[in-house]
Amino acid sequence: MIVGISYIGLRCAKPYNPSVVAGNNNYLVVEGNINTGTDSTTINLSRTTNIASGITSLPELNAAVTIQDNENVSYSLNTNGDGSYTSALLTLDPARMYRLSITTSDGKIYLSDFVPATTSPAIDSVGYITQSNGLQIYVNTHDSKNATHYYRWDYNETWEFHAKYASNFITNGTAIVPRTNNIYQCWANDISNDIELGSSAKLSQDVIYRAPLTFIPSTSEKIEDRYTILVKQYAMTSAGYNYYSLLKQNTEELGSIFDAQPSTLTGNIHCTSSPNIPVIGYVTAGTVALKRIYIDYNTLPSNYITTYPYNCAEDTALYDDTRFPPPQVNRVAALLIPLSSQIQSVITVALTKQNAVIGYLYTDHDCGDCSIRGSTTPPSFWIAGPYN
Image (cartoon, rainbow, N blue to C red):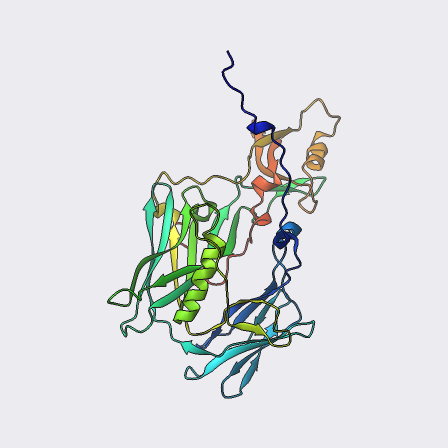
C-alpha cells in the first residue's frame, strides 16, 4: 500500500554558474621566503585560474624578479623556466629589511612591503605516532629566548617503492633475454600542499609540542619500503601569521555549513603600475631551520599493508600454444613487445618444464615498471636503510 509520494527526486535543477566561477580572474600569485641564511632563495610565481577552466596550474613565465633591501642593494633571481625563480647563494644582512620587486612579461610592476628578517630557532625533533589507520607526523620546536611565537612549516617527502611484480626478462621483438636495468625499485617525491602553522603566543613559554604536519594512511605506498621527510621551519611575524591563518581558513576549512565564512585576504604585495589589480601572496624574510627523518617499513606495525594503486595480475605466454602457428618462440617474443613501445607488457619470470623453458609470465606495464611513477635513481641525499 502506498501511503505517501515524494516529489523531491522529480524536481528540475537549473545549473547555477556564478560570475566568480567563470570570471577572468587572472591574478598574480607570489609564494616564497627571502632566505637570509646561507642558502639560495626561490620564489614561485603563478596565476589564478577559473574553476570552470579545468586548469590547475598556470606558472608565470619570463618575469624579472629581484630582492631589494632598505639600503638600496638589489639581488637578481634567475628563471628556472617553470614559474620558479632562484637566486645564487646569498649571505644577506639579517639587520636589514627586504622586499621583492617583480616585473611581469606584460610590463606590470609589483612590489612587496619591506619586512624584517626573522631568525628561526632550530627544530627540536620530527617524529610520528602510529595509529590504527596510519602515521601522524609531527614537529617539536622551542625558542629559549621566548621571542618567536609564530611558526610556519612546509616539507618535502621522498619514498622508496617497488612495482607489483619484478621483471627479470626483456624482449627485443624476436628474442627474450635477461633484463639488465632496474624497473622494480623506484623513488618518488612530493611537496606539502596544506598550510601548517603553530603559535605559542598564548602560552607562558615559546614551545611548540607535537604540531601535526601530515598524516600517512597505513595503506599508502609512501611507507611500503622507506620514507623520508624534510621539514622546513619559518619564524613568522604576527602579520604574516595572520595572513596565512586566513589563507588556510579560506582554502582548507570551508565546505560545510558549520565552517567559517571566507574572509578578505590582504597580502603585502601590490601592483604599483595598476593599483586596482589584486595580488595574492605574502612575502617573508628570514632563516629557515631544517630537519630530516627516515622511517623504515620494518619498524611500523605489522598490520600496515600497502594497497597497490592498480589491479594487477600475471598472464601466461606459452611456446606450445597450438592456437598460433610456429615458430612459437618468435611469437611469444613478438607478443611481449619491447619496452620502447608505448603499449607495453613486462615479462616477469620464465616457466620451465624438465629444465626447459616453455614460456613466460607477463603483466601490464603499470604493474611491472615502477619508472612510470618515479625515478629508478635514488636522490643524492638518500641514505639506504638497514633493510635494503
